[in-house]
Image (tube, rainbow, N blue to C red; front, side):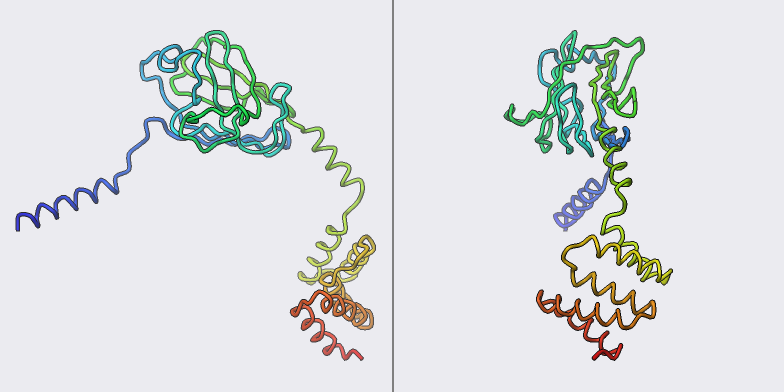
Length: 280
């Protein structure tokens, strides 16, 4: 009986500990910032000084540092950027650094799955590295802060502050290139897909069928090979607009394309529609 009670108490105690949630000494932080048309996300853990000397002590000089606590500090770019003059592709990177008294080396590392520093440092995984000067602050930053500041339409600084030290990594963004791509696309007019999508939306929403027909025909003109699934939608628009003869001709073309592609669903849908429209 005593053994049973002991086991029961032990099981109960383990259950309590298994459910216990406690705050982390270095809490996680996730921030997202738009710079121009680019999105930047930063995920990191935030250690505090807790009355300790940080740089040169808790974080030694001239040794590579995880730049945070726990898992990798990760920065994610939605577009290509430049770190200084170095091009960096869109994607996620671990941020490592080597703090020195007068400057830091900051690394953007392709492998983001490490807990802290990689067991083996791979120079080939360094996508970009920049040396930036140390700035002395006139106030105390108790908890490590990593954020984007000095925001402009095409520039920002990755600012890392702790204790009375801050470093800033200059980052350039391709805002003008992205805007000009958008301008060119708009000024060139809608694409075939734009016309198709708009026409199908009007069809499904029961809106202006004349406009849906116009858009669909404009889209079809832009496509050299008419896909059977778009011909199917065009036939439905003609039928909804009371143009049965055009609907039948288009449905037959869709049926022929579906047969060549071996698409049983579209074969049946077209055959059903042709029967409904009394096609000969």
